[in-house]
Length: 111
Length: 115
Image (tube, rainbow over all chains, first blue to last red):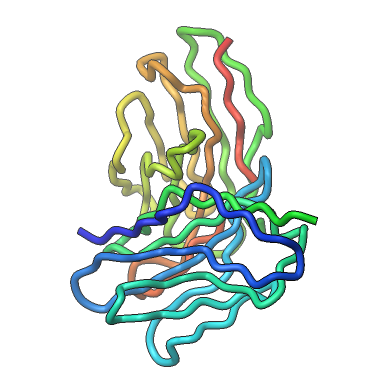
C-alpha cells in the first residue's frame, strides 16, 4: 500500500529564513505526490504535485518541492518565509482511486 | 475552496440524533470524497464515490452513510451509531480515477459538535 510520512509535528522558522517541511513516501510503482495547506477552520488548498519530469516542482504562493527518488522524499520548500505561511501542511500520495494523506506538519513562522 | 460548498459551517447534535452534512460541487467532477479530521490525526477517509449511484467505504465508514443520486451532490449522514462524531468534516472532489495524477479540491468544512 502507498503511504507518506511527515516526521515533524511542528516546524518553527524565523520570518525571512528558508523553510523546509519534510515528507517521505513508500510506493509501489511511480509515485504521484501532492502538497496541501490548511489555514485554521478552513478546507485544504492544493499547493503542488509531482507526476513525472523535473524533480523540482513549483507551486502556489512561492512554494516548491523537490522529488528525490533515491531518498524517497518530497520535501516542501520556500526560500524566504512569511508570517502568513503559518498553517498546517499535508503531504499526500495517490493510491489507485484515492489519496493517502500524512498526519500533517504545523508550520510556525516567527516574526 | 473553489466550486465546492459545504453546509452548515457549524452543526450541533444531541446524542442519539442523526444529522446530514451537505456537499455540493459545480466543477463537473465525477469523484467525491468525505474525510474526518481530528487534532493530531490528519485526514481519515470515510466514504468516496467515483460515479453517480456508486460509492465505497473508506477507512472509518462505521456509523456513517452516504448517497450519490446526483453528480453534484454527496451528502453524508452521521448516524447515532457513530460513538464519537465530534470532528471537522471535509468534502472533496476530483475529476476521477482515470488519471492517477488526479487532484482533489476541498470544500470549507463543517464542524460537528455533539452536545
